[in-house]
Image 1 (tube, rainbow, N blue to C red):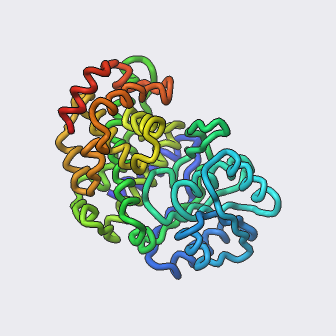
Image 2 (cartoon, one colour):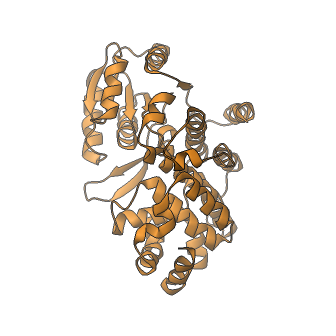
Length: 358
């Protein structure tokens, strides 16, 4: 599978004017990570990078890396103001940005790198979402609106599998949930194309499908028991990276984001803090798959295997509340045509569907 995917990416890159990361590396152990990062920084001619991280685990990883000539900044949140602050620091004396951590530091670093036109290198400390290798960042605007915006595609992703495997297990479960959403997102994309609302990029769709195939069919029950094995971490990392590349090739998040993500966005709007993004996407995938006429049993089985009990229970919000939330989902991203737009289910119909699923 890995050789076939590498050949596919090479074939795509030879035909299109697109950006792809130059380095996609996975290692085992902090010493190997430090050595790999040093090699990559030399390869991109960086001598004064700005390292950005969160305040806890990712900050400790920064301490171990000790990159020559690097300055450090802690990312407090993923607001527009924080993006502008990091960009201002990076623009003064730095020639690259290194993002160490999870979603927020990575998203802020990618957006800041876009503003400053600096290369960004990603060192993930968790495998919770496909943003680690995508050209999309989730940022909170000054008015509190959460937006998905174009950002810099990383020139390199370098992961220590031991570090990501040791992260709290909820992050890896969320990563599986985010990948699971590719299934319904691709169907939604084709629904949009059939309605004349979009055009499917077949290569991007293939990469998105391959990303899910990397973990689909594997024994995911160790995750349900609270363990992320090194081999599963490697597969999950590769899948999340491929999803990011699919979005770069498509020029949008369409290959990996459909009605299931809109449902997650609606949960964020009306019930903030319900669950991780990936677990909310897994719940959304369950609803979307039912509406699309897909294999709900397979989706449910995968969600159960990794231990996302909240997604299976609807986060105990009840069918009435969830029906209102799902009904609002299309409004979170006008123009993103999905099965929710095609079928326009009423709140009453959604209530019955959700009650049946839960």
